[in-house]
Length: 136
Image (cartoon, rainbow, N blue to C red; front, side, top):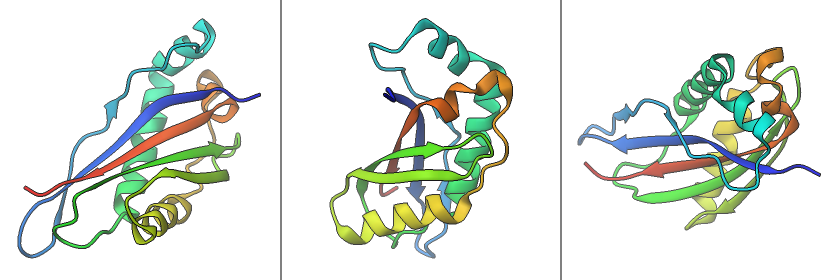
């Protein structure tokens, strides 16, 4: 049974009148209670953090919302060892349109590349992603 690991926060800010986006750097999110020490150690490994930063970059590049949108979307993502998406589920979204945009961004940015051995927890657990958009 997969444990859900909150490891990736994807944040964006809608920045100016011409609808350009400002990408905030990847921020490591706290790991939820109940996660094994081995998984915590894996997530803290530099190889896992590099992989998550690259995943973040790819998703942000594919993520597009209308200017002025303010929302939070939460998704559950599972990947395999080669970085292909095994499954994606939107857990929270204010609208179906934003659910669709988040799903499209995730799917179109994959595959994310082979998961390093030191970061095997990324393919062994479901990842919980939070997309945040807000007005400047």
